[in-house]
Image (spheres, rainbow, N blue to C red):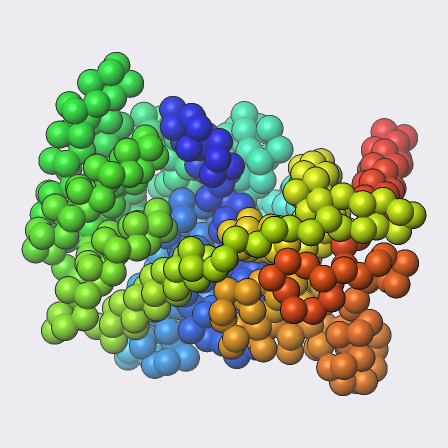
Length: 523
């Protein structure tokens, strides 16, 4: 998806949302795996990255960030995160419960009571909540959609559930039906807000503004006011970038630079302008605009937002320079100071990985021998495995082979991307955790490698139902001896590839299983 965006920036919006959704799922899976091992810093860094993505489901990350802030005693930071979650997904039970607790911890009992009365805590439908949780846990989009339909039947007045279902339908080419489901409930300010929010997620900025305009200013709540500001900014940035499509690149640059240097305390304007330049493939001028924006006095939250955009775009030097200036800012809250530290750590880790890759002598990938006398290069294996994964992202054998091949080619970026997708689709697979340890070791992250090995051991013990220790877990998670083990380039230990035949057989079996399910549904 990243390659598609880079190849055709004009399609950035369409591909960008899909990429953000996929990357968000990988970040969330990474954060949950880190939390399971007690690595709070790594989990929080992944959650911060997830919260910056333009993914419809980002409320899940905001809730977890709120929970972490609450555990640290940062009640104000927790409140901000829970409110951000409710802005992204109205009525989310976990966010309402968290916000209620945060308000009470600050002694704001009247606000907490008003929150409960407005349809928060105590007004949820337990069956609908359980079905929604099951839908979030499943890896089958069609099954998730069916569960959400059932949940909506149990709680037809729940606007948030309608939004969930509309988002699920949009991923399955059912955007028109999803819009109809949302718009049928757009008779209240809450329903109108949900319809406007979904329209913005689909890039229909004019439609979203028309929806919000139906609510009088005096009845529009803080989320509605904030959304209208963002929609106006979306329209302004799109108009500013418009001349580039007509060949007037310099005019578009001037327009976006003017937005970037605007003294916006929140940082939304400079962040939007820099994102637009990056999406257009103009990374060099994006860095120039970011440096100009960084010189404009603004609140730390605005500078943090801009630093996050730069870091996500791979502009580490500019991000580090901006964060370095923030380090001694006396206006930083405890939560903001922690964000600065985590962002600086992320920038440093990324730079270290790149430097090690640049310094390492080029390794010549060895051919890989397979059972039955088959011998292929890692590049061939990677091509075959990725082709299978495009058809069936949950094909475990293909994913193992693809990650092994990427490691053999010293392509750590691709191995990391394949790994994160595997963590999202199979979070309890001990072999994925073992591969996480190998990728971490190659990147020089010993702490992450040790944590991943611990996870692999625990997951394998859970599979076999008996505690035999880490050695048994690691041995049991290795591939069958029918595949010959060969040393991979740059790896000091024996490793193994799943055979191409096994990948293809698994793919055919998965295809037959899907065909049987479709036949049963038709019957």
